[in-house]
Image 1 (spheres, helix red, strand yellow):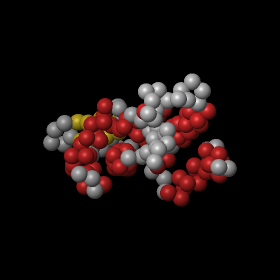
Image 2 (cartoon, rainbow, N blue to C red):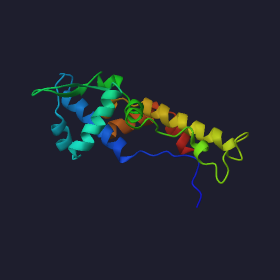
Image 3 (cartoon, rainbow, N blue to C red):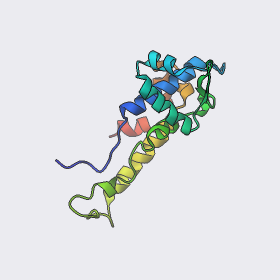
Image 4 (cartoon, rainbow, N blue to C red):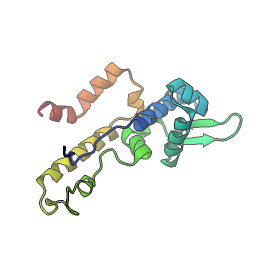
Length: 167
């Protein structure tokens, strides 16, 4: 069976990253409280090793800061309103939707037989833009809302829902 040219996936690692940074946002509660690695891992039910690796990626992406020492821990580097889902997912895995999809799905050839004129590529590129723009439109602050309130806000503030309803 041939794979599609797209590779849109939210991995468990990305999901853990979203949960971890959301936990920091909730626990920090605008008080600049530091949260320990073990506290985050325990609260989210994620191993300390995975939590540490994800925190390192979030720190590298400049979304969180850390303080060493007995009373050290982690905190957001910006307010929850200034951090969006695209930044988090991109900071963890670098690709939410592989824009180079056609380079890795060439079939038996070195270069795809449709490389010069591919109408499907424009579809995948549009999906790529829609997904990334949608993720960028949702801040951690919005994720701190109750689920029902966030659903309502998403439906009111995005054209993506309207586009998807016509598919």
